[in-house]
Image: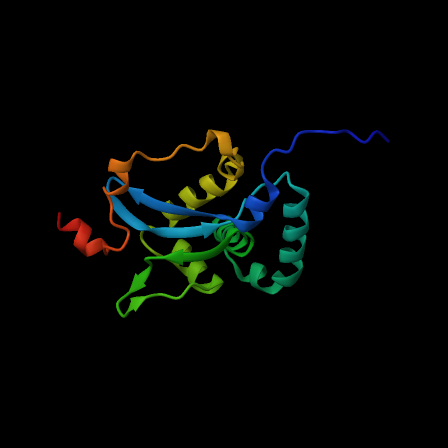
Length: 157
């Protein structure tokens, strides 16, 4: 057998660490979500999917549609956090169960799922940027947004 040397498709440490994806549509913000790389061609993904299939066998059988099965798998393999997701009592703590319910049962959940799936599957989001390619924002742009202001304060401008 030949041991081929091939370039890495993405930065594995960044893929495992994950990225934060802010989801919005036409100026409507739906929240930000923490996702890991969702690459079906990765040996890491294959092992994780096999483990998922074993440990969630009973839950998977209860899911009625392929869409629910896809969302459930994505939540358990790729999602690990969120921000700005609320119910009538305020912020909702991230759990896999809450994430599945949000993505499969809410009015905007399927749209958010599609966006998250797209971003988590795009390996360009998990490539390390060489330091010589990093660009610093001009000084005037640094003051454009105050990260300490709440969404309500910013939206009032």
